[in-house]
Amino acid sequence: MRTPTELSLKQKKGRKSEASKRRPKTRASHAARERKVDARERAAAERLAVVEARERAAEARDRVLTERDALGNERDRRAAERDALANERDRRAAEREAGFAGATTAKAVMIRPGSSGSERSGVNGTGSVPTTPDEEAEDPALERARLEAQLQRAHLDGLTGAYRREVGRLALRNEIERARRSDGRFVIAFVDVDGLKGVNDREGHAAGDKVLRTLAATMRANLRTYDPIVRYGGDEFVCGVASVDPEEVRHRLGVIDQSLRNATGVGITAGIASMVGNESLEELTERADAALLEAKRSRA
Image 1: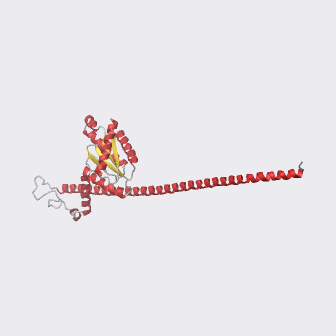
Image 2 (image 1 turned 90 degrees about the horizontal axis):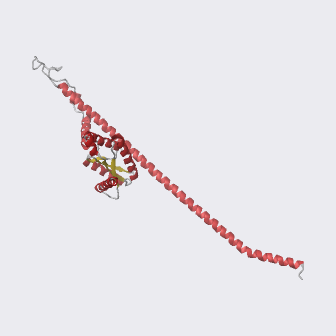
Image 3 (image 1 turned 30 degrees about the horizontal axis):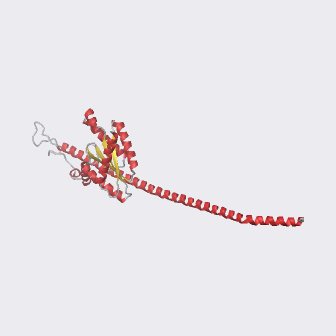
């Protein structure tokens, strides 16, 4: 029979044995928890790095967009200055032409009935109105402005004010080259008036002409001043838009369509094509024309 002292010693040995058995498990558990914590910390650090990378990319995109907007605003400002200069030249040329007409009328001489041939209705008795050296001399600046205005009018369609086809194609090629040197984005829109023949048949060609003039004015109001608008033939127009996504061009065409419907009762159908690689103007226009035909078939 064991004494209490022996039992106590045996119990202590048992507890030490159990503790020694549990100790490796405890160490393994701690190591596993540390590994999990390390894994979570690494994952959190990776997520933070991804977020920071996204924020840097967003900041870079914002800078690019800001610079692009600034460039677009500068182009708009320069285009507005060019338009103002052209309008001033037209005004001065018109004043000069009016001055020429008035001078010609004032210099006309008439022989009063019953008077001698030398007695004419002039103040100097020579049959002409006195002129100053300034009136006789040509103003080179005004003459140049008049000729430039005439050249500009020769390049524009007389009804709508849009570019004539050949000059317009040259303007579109120039914009394509600028787009290639910039961000490479350029969209051609091929626009056709819906039901213009019906307007001509019902209300006359004057009403049809009004529709075309209204469309051209609406396109100019909803596009940038430097975006070429070309009257391609009859009721077809082509316009080119650089540094703008196709979705934005579709949105603007939708606004033009609704505005024209509100003003005239007829709308437009449009097909667009976005430039790819070194695509030529002819290839781009052909794709936009095909998109226009497809849009018309889908409406039928």
